[in-house]
Length: 334
Image (tube, rainbow, N blue to C red; front, side):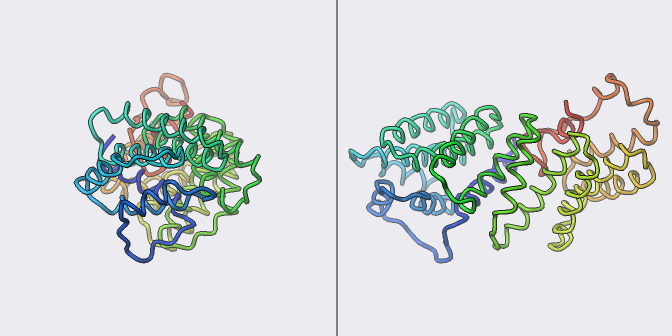
């Protein structure tokens, strides 16, 4: 996984966990304040952890490692404290790609979850499960990610949490379920997440572009091409509003796929060429895959309709669109 891709995913899950907490003023947390936040009970949305995580996200590795070293010296009898401390270690280990990163992230997540269960606090257990799911998604551990997201969702349902407080996680869960090919469930969570997610920050539109596109891919996988096209167009409208040329290209490419599948090859070609001309500069893996679709048009659909032909489609490792699975695999259902 490239450093850029890791950063994009880290920004994604930090963004959603801070969705309901304001960080408009710069702050510097003392060790004492950090301990107080980590030991806090009745913090139902775990906003104290979110503030600490946001503070760490602004800092370099030297500061973070030194801070974690100081925090590790603290002697606490609180399971709340250690649940949050181990989760913070997991986040920062992932963020800085430390030695044995994959093993350590899972280890710290497991320790955090064990401590959370030690509290008996369902709100904290749900929060730790959600973050475990986030880190596993960012690590491309899709099955583990789905397991812990769904556990968090199960607890949230039992707690009767409001839809607005769950919307951010639903959007992430919807993406994960796409990757596990549970398209109907993916649609359910993405649609409900978008309906109940009311963030108005500058970054929010970027994520709306992404999730409307993901909905389109779900419908395309299910063969519901009219619904796929409708959702790609919704994603495109937001991309045009914020003048995001890369996403305009991505959505054009997916709409071109739909028109190809409808055998409207002229419209498909124009949209795919638009996508390629933009993303050959910005997103080479998407551009490479778009060339595959253009080749299908040039060579004739009968030639590439066989399983053998499908196997030679390029498989980019990473992309903005549903990033932990290749765009080729997403579109071809392979």
